[in-house]
Structures are given as C-alpha cells and as structure tokens.
Length: 189
Image (cartoon, rainbow, N blue to C red; front, side, top):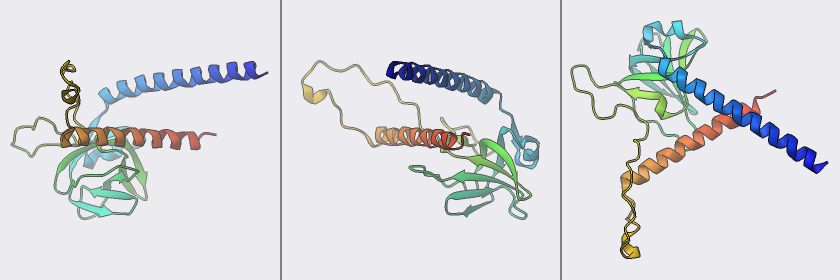
C-alpha cells in the first residue's frame, strides 16, 4: 500500500514538474513577444500581459501597494506595485517607465499589476544616451575568478556591498516567486 502511494505521488510530482516546465517555456516565449503600448492605449491590453509606457505624474501610497499614475487629473490609468515580503520599490516619481504585468479594468480604471521590481523598466530621459542598465532588476552576477591555491586566507574575499545587494535582490525575487506559487496553490480548486 505504501509503495503504491509513493508511486502515485512520484507520478503526480513528475506531472506537476512537467507542467511547470512547459508553463515556464511558454512564459519565456510570451515575454519576448509582449506588446508595449503607451499608457493612453492600455485599454487595448485588458485581460493580457503587456508593457505599458508612460511618465509617472503622481505616486499614491495605499498601504499594501503603491499606485503610480500616468495622468495627474483623472487617474484613469495606473500601475499597481504590490508590496510583499522583502520587496522594496524605488521612487519612480517623474520617471518614464515601462511597467509589464497583467492589465485589468478595476472600478472604471485601467491598472497594470506588478509584483516585483523586475517588472518595471526605467527609460532614460529623452535626448540622453541609455545607461548601461535601465531596469530596476538585479544586475547579472559577474563570474568569479577561479579559486586560488594559495593560503586559505586568500580563498574567501570579503563580500562587497555590491555583491551583498545582488544576493539580497536575488533572495527577494526568489521569495516573490515562492509567494506567487503559494498564492496559485491556495486558489486551486
């Protein structure tokens, strides 16, 4: 009996893993083909994941989220930045951004839901050269040199603040991914 249960569990785990891998491949393919629209045209993307471009005119703190408004008058289109465990958002006021996430209609407004800083790209000001990196996501880690065969004291260099910052950002993204997976599992029928 126990062996049969273990076999079923192993098959179920294998199927779940296969589904997750397939979903990851689909998401990667979709990410390359995602449409980016001006914030005035965001209604075209309702029900889909899109990139929405605009200059942030106003920022509102709503406790569990931050809301970025592209229009200062009627607040018809906004970006909803969800706060989560270990997720911190930079200040986007007066910056031109592309926010990528699900676009939905909520109370006669269009909102783009973003759960992690990697979903917001800060664009350079018009007329300036693009900086080396324009996203708020963590920088890719540079390969570390091969370990030295010298004395043990030289094997472990002191961690720099930059490498610590990359590690913290990587951990934040991992926690965010786990929170999303937990949310999906909790909402499963």
